[in-house]
Picture 1: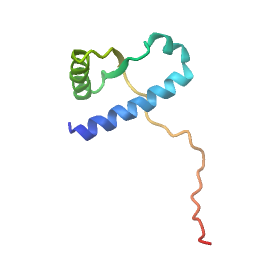
Picture 2 (picture 1 turned 45 degrees about the vertical axis):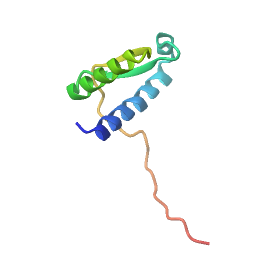
Picture 3 (picture 1 turned 90 degrees about the vertical axis):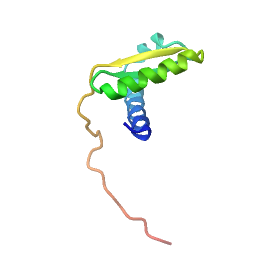
Picture 4 (picture 1 turned 135 degrees about the horizontal axis):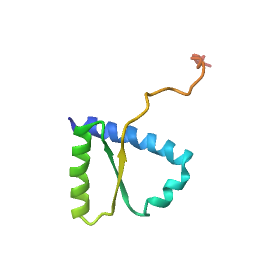
Length: 91
């Protein structure tokens, strides 16, 4: 998997986890301050392995790592209802 694809997948997981934290703020009590969260998606072995490698590198550099294990993601659905696309008129 290319580095850009790994980054994109981790960014997408970060966004999803941010949404989860908004809905479940109690999870924040389990995440130490000044720690780095590393996602371990059990449904994506390649990303899981790449993130474990990244975590090991960061741990050897002295960073505090917190693993976020993800069993699976629900199918992606948009919460947008009937969007309208409008063109701006030039002045």
